[in-house]
Image (cartoon, rainbow, N blue to C red; front, top):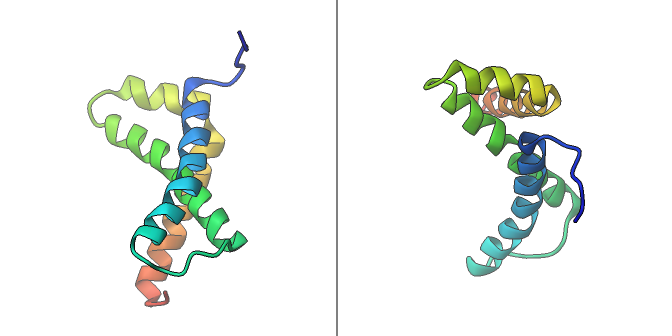
Length: 98
């Protein structure tokens, strides 16, 4: 069996990011939108997928501070990426650019 060195938080974050890269093109095909492989779209889908797990942990921290402490200890980088993407999203909403 393969030994995994990463924390479950980091592994889940990467897996959700990779799943987002696969699911989004399928949703575009279902909606009959133009589905060609653009690297910008794939990278954006991956980064959006990376944000899901940190945001879920932050939502869970309302219930238990232990969840927040463990998540911050195990993966600061993913919280930073999630926060940066959230900041960019809010800035785009405030400026009205899409």
